[in-house]
Amino acid sequence: MNYSIEDIMERAKELTTKPEIVVRAEQMLLDPNISFKDIAKVVSMDPGLTARAFKVANSCFFGRLSKAKTLTEAIVTIGIKGLYSLVLVHLIKEYYKTFGLQEMSFWNHSVSVSISSMILATEKGLGEVEDAMVSGLLHDIGKDILNSAEPETYADITRKVRCNGISYALSEQELFGFTHAEVGFELAKRWNFPEHIQKVILYHHNLFCLRQIEKESPASFWLTSLVNLADTLCIRLGMSIKTPQNGFGWGDVEAAKTLGFSEEQLTELEPVIKTRIEEEKRMFD
Image (cartoon, rainbow, N blue to C red):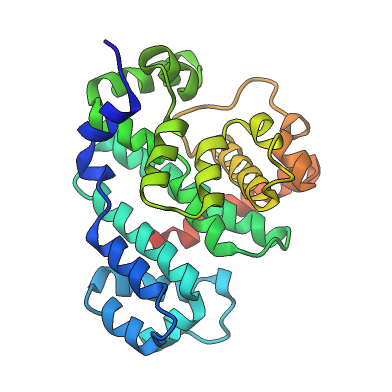
């Protein structure tokens, strides 16, 4: 069967149509005259989003000395950009509520990569924790679209990845003629994600191609390297369908060298990150 990205997007319309909540969030957050109290009034109409705002604001990543007691305090802590990221997180979580084991394994991996990305960003003092959060969560969104459009075919791909040790990208290329990174990039363009997040989704498995535009977009390069390293860490920690290759060493990981992490640092960070994922994943519940 011949596939096209356009056809896949059409058949996964439930996921690929830009939801009204995202459109409203964009309009609200781009309004220079809107106040945090006005934003809090809108957010308070959605109990799930309200709860998630408190969880994220009171997580260790934002360093509050005392817990936010009001929704306005929580939103001030997260910031405008962080709140938009939170809307995307909330939306994707709602999508996963009605799906099965494969979809939940994708969700759990994405959450783990998101938290790992935030930890690595904090460790290196790179700032932009909100970008690390949402980029980690969205890096594999193309898998969800492909799985939604072609569930039986994608189940076969997952079996190949698990049993034969090949990559998702290689198996997808063989069966579809394109990869989840390209499909996710198409969604990111349609939804007008910030350009640096679009590039994370497109290049998170291909740092070589990303290096060609490093000077043009250094923020994209660093953020993509961060997510690539977080993804590798989560595979190492067993938080993925894939398993680490025999003879794996951090010295061979390009993203680790790019970000200046030594083999010793990452070996020490592995158990720390595993514990932190368990502690902080409630942000996404």
